[in-house]
Length: 152
Image (cartoon, rainbow, N blue to C red):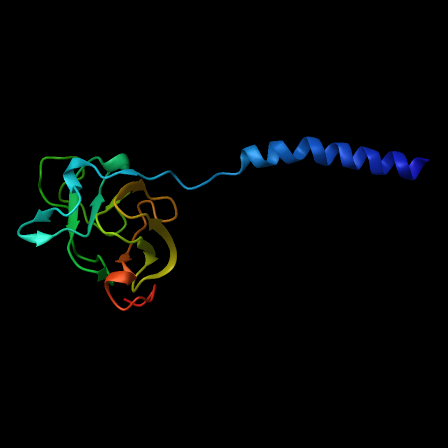
């Protein structure tokens, strides 16, 4: 009888704990449509925009326009003096959100040369960085290049 009661108590505790545990699980920030500052198929300085890195969250602040299929290291690059928050700051380790202006997912990496933890930015969307918030060092959209993620 004692063993059955212990089993029943454990089962009840699990049934109660499961919904609480599920509610506490966090998911990455949901992606939102592209902002007007990084519209689909847009150009900046005559080059097709692939990615827009924002100094602030939710697509706010100064914007660094990325034109390539990858960048192995943001070292030395700066947000432009565009009158927005964060202007003139180094891009590396200072972006809080990213807009992906391509038809496939883009990846923003914690380390140089597309390695380490990363955030996945869905096609044609804006997303706050989670894994690499103010800690991004490289970017890649493998489907625009050789198709291999982590190869920049």
